[in-house]
Image 1: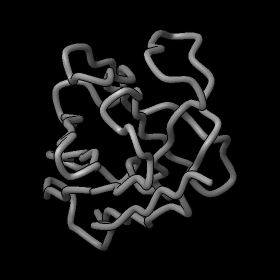
Image 2: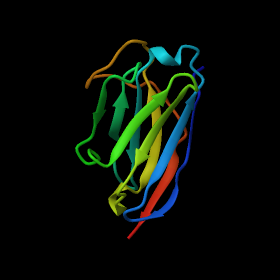
Image 3: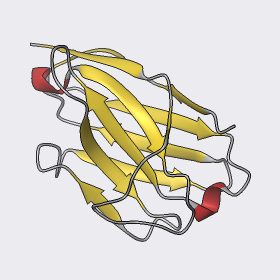
Image 4: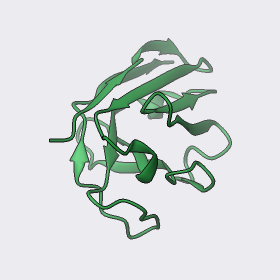
Length: 124
């Protein structure tokens, strides 16, 4: 069973920064694309960013491009989300996720495993 554990959320003022981390229990973490998603109150969960298994390819939602950066450390089985210039509309629970197939990447990728989420609240 894959376990994903997020951390790093909290309360920050608009314009501030936070760095989220997600540690995965995958035995071959370096073979899997990882992603970040978020869900705001009353809204559907939405894609934020993804990174391919070697970190060569990344993809971002238009709403976070230029402000958020996804990265990974395969040595630490960890994926990160650096969030800068935060806005109140970034307030949400942020989830880490991965697919159940290694070596896959793309806009149609299905993410099968999810963490419990970490709350990010941005005050105006």
